[in-house]
Length: 232
Image 1 (spheres, rainbow, N blue to C red):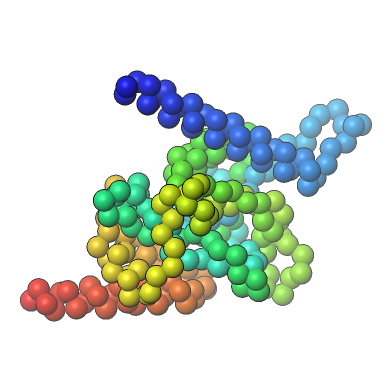
Image 2 (image 1 turned 180 degrees about the vertical axis):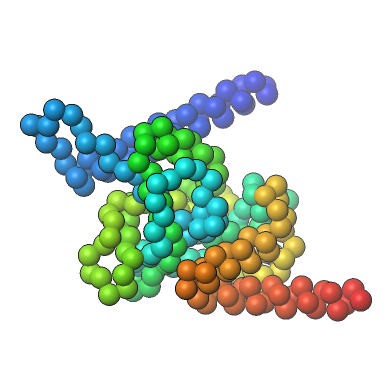
């Protein structure tokens, strides 16, 4: 039974890796086209956008890192985490993106040029982001006044609200309830509150004040302070 499960898991990981690479290559082909007169195929760089822990901890080799934003999305703590910042018994909460016309989401985009680095990065990300069921290819901007993106076709992982595809999706809740859950949750990657405070720090370092996140961080600090006073 265990060996069958391991084989199935291995097959699923390989399928996701193969599909991701194929999907990325197809996107680049459609966006950039190809030349019949070329003697060789031009190898395009891969770009990955991070809006959560990827901002401060990429975990893969990259050639360049740009600070910037994507349009018409907002960052929300609606995704349940049972593998990194929580457990199946008590999930943590991590960020995902939800459509928000007119809003922007700041983060960091990573450029990966070497073919072996692309494969390694995709393999790594498919495991790290395995609870994020959707990949999108978006325009990335570095200048708030620009109408033309700095880079197109940037890959981003999203945890969708579709419970059939994403059973760990938790959805909206009050600031108080989300903060309480974050304060109490802990998983293999550490306390959930550490993730919250690290993300707050990383965003402030790039000049971004995310109201949703900062409200949660302030409420989490209030809960922790209250607990300390009660304990003493």
